[in-house]
Image (cartoon, rainbow, N blue to C red; front, top):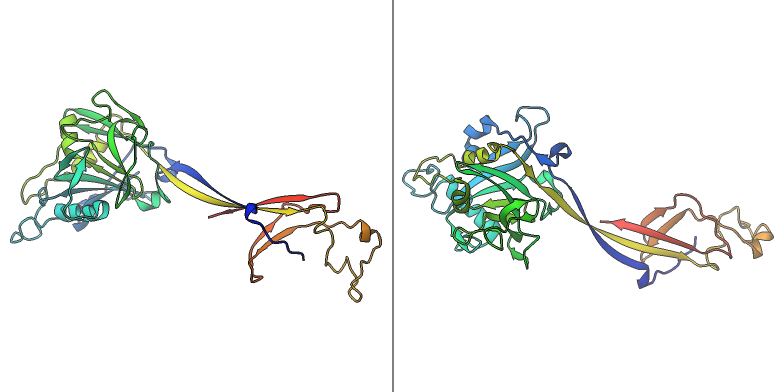
Length: 336
């Protein structure tokens, strides 16, 4: 066994971005959505609705995303206790997303310069993606009482990327799969009602702005005091009620690769310590023609640290002939 110390130039690190479909069974576009009536009437239904790609009782049913409604004042849902004004599932949801996304209980949700007291949240199930959602791949059709709209994010036209506690933040605008509709404003949304919400790829969430959706397609929330406004059901109906149901979104994963180049120059690694190569008693080469013209067939490369500890092993696809007239260059790729 022979050793050779690697030089800094023998190491190269590369990162590649890999995209994939998001929905179960490799579906590119989700065109059918279902909820669970059992979950909807249960205690969790006051906070969110799980959405499936097939009937929830089916053997292949899997949660694709969840829908929730948050209100700063606790309106739109019944109070936990009539004696505690404002404490309701909608206020709890608002505070949870406020802490997760903004990280400041004194700061509200500002969509395109306009603050909204409430929102709808579309949270992609964590098992649907490995690292994050893919900006520019979103195309979501929503229907309201006065029409329908297709939403995408403005990642393809944004001059800079905004960050908050949830990571990257893109505005939701009208368009489809990264193609922004600029007929109203250059940024894709009206300044009077703000953007249609936020696209948060790093936590797999869409935050929808009811104010903008109400002005655009008549899709509004019920902000009744101490009463269940069925707002979770309203956003589900907006997704499921579109004439051409369509929810297109991809995932994204960054894979870092460490390339290590192993070089065996013509004068190196031509002799072997294999018992068939040398005498066990004298250590001499058994065959005279191997003295001046040896041949070896490397099959394995081991990577060691300075403590002589084996860290990784690379197996060649086939033995390679090595002698004084040949040099070998082997590239090892480590993905992590």
